[in-house]
Amino acid sequence: MSASVQTRAPRRLVTALAGALALALSGVVGTFGLSDALSVSRPGLSLMLDSGQADARMRLAQAALDQEPPDFEQVRAHAREALAGDPLAPAALTLLGLAAEEAGDLDRAEALMRMSARTSSRDAAAHAWLLSHDIRKANPESAVARLDWILRTTSPARRDALFPILAPLFDDDTMIPPLARLLAQDPPWRERLLLHLVGRRGNSKPLWTLVTALQSSAVPPTQDEFGPYLDRLVAEGSVEAAYAAWLAHTPPERLSGAGLLYNARFQHPLDATPFDWVPTKSPGVTLRLEGPRRNRIVNLDFFGTRIANAVMVHLLMLAPGEYRFVGAERARGLLTDRGLRWKITCVENADAPLAVTQPMSGDAEWRPIAMDFDVPEACRAQTLMLELPARGALERVITGSASYTGLGVEARPESAK
Image (cartoon, rainbow, N blue to C red; front, top):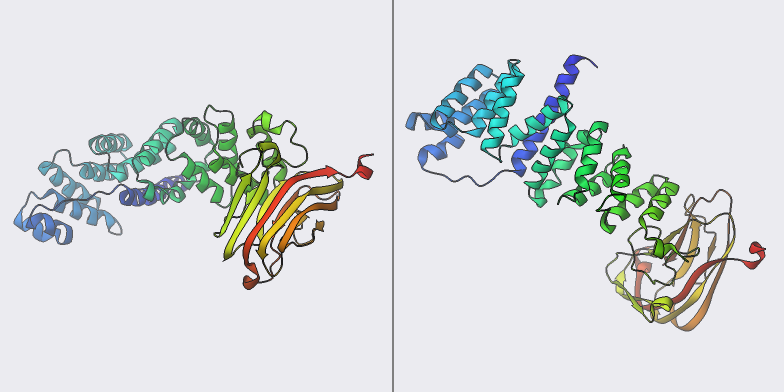
């Protein structure tokens, strides 16, 4: 890569990051009279009223910087005048730092930027410049520490806007180890960063590296952090990697005796991952558990609203063979055009069910479930789903309740021989 390209890339990062940080870190600036008010809209007139007006000088310096090409002589002149009126004006120090950088004096530029950052924690441009400077100097530890400061001092409501701008940092392999160590300390912005990386298209290696490191830390990923990460892996087709990560994350006592269908009886709290039960988030549906922990009844109550077709989903990792899904079900006042049914498919072909049960609706006392299905060789993972097989929006309206108990997956006797 040419030197000119190497120079332009960090400057683009500084420009974008500084703009976003300026918004994120901005505060309410009071007004202190006519010349202060004019310094915002008409800085030249403000200076006629008060030649020492620092804000007006700063706006003229900023205007000179915004020219194409920038007039750095005017930037320096107005910034120095502003410092004469306010010797510790951080924005003036920052503009002098940018002018020093343009003149090729990086040592002076760094010194001015550090002075500006120390003087005011709200000088977004200075902190953006120093962050980019740390990256250019291959100092990831310092860059990550400054990143932590920036995100800690940004309001949660505006923090999310910074993550896309910071994306180039997360694609830098040298940044990942110190960032992983910092995330292991559970900073207040950790969850939002991980969720941003989950939703970001393209390179998923940083996300995988960070979550893997967190799994062996003193503060492993929470359910809200880990579930979306596994969903991302499954969506990308890395279902085996997702399953391995889930096994490493799940307490051994929960896996002991789990059988072919983890948490089959809902004996454990749902862990919000695809390898456990995932109920619909549609409004108008509630899930209630009753009975002893080892033999619970799962009640789904519907309140006459439209819901998603998938009422409850569970991802399985069954080897090729012959199986049976078993249990019992009951309906009370279950009003729906299409009924509720169980279905199992291969993740590679969700439109071709391996098997379905007879739909249930109306009023029905407890009746057995026995759904036989064969897993073919090319079926790496399977989706077990309780669904409302609606063909359109009107058929997705459902009222009443459905209950299930004794659920499980077992190898069919003829297959186990």
